[in-house]
Length: 357
Image: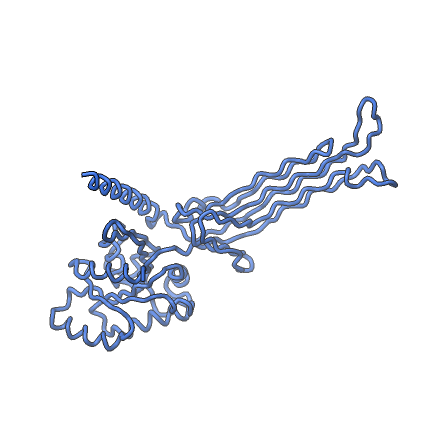
């Protein structure tokens, strides 16, 4: 009985986490591309104060330094899955450093501004398109705009020939930069295929995700994530990537807006419908688009699922199976049907084994 209670509690936690993730990843809330203008704080000015006390009328300079301006820091947060929280924040500023005071007291530093982003976020300089940083670890920080240094007070400038300097340094201005944040989703398995290959249907069947499903191309316009529950409460994350078309690497269709998400997936599952005219040709086109976009994608583990296999009778499936063994000699494949619930357990076993080999 105790074991059952624990299992139920674990299952409840899993379902709660899954529902929270799915609510966050709905198509309307999923934002993976943001441009923001950043302005860090200016450094505080140094003080020109001269020491004046009752019995020390000419005490000399004792002006303190100005405080540092606030940084703008981008920080990774494993609990975030989208950039939606930044959708309406197009200008972010940090506060200025405080001015120096008497008795060589340093001004207060400006307050740092933190921008929390999901893991897998790429930070680019909008003007040069240069990649400044990729956030991949929880708690990882990157100073996108550094606060200005505080100016020195007049106490630094006294000398034997200038015992009462009445000047100090102004603070250095903070940095101003336009950055682009691009999210490349982190998932264990990425679904790759042409529009209408059955990716969204598969995701809706093996996870609790509810992607939009219809019988026209590009039903999916943004990636969808789902948590696949495996045996003994083990799980892995599957991502439904919008369909690829020829020329996607050059920006046709949804182009680079979805191809970048494939870069972060551990394993690529190619979905090819059983009613396709030429299975090998479809696979080669998909592979070529990935290669042209980023040759490193070909180094990822690849598996093939022949979807809509309920359209095949046993004889035709056996014949096709023999052909595919010759066609895909070094790649594992499986026949599945999301609608008829066929081959899904075999597919999960194959994926889990591949992810943990």
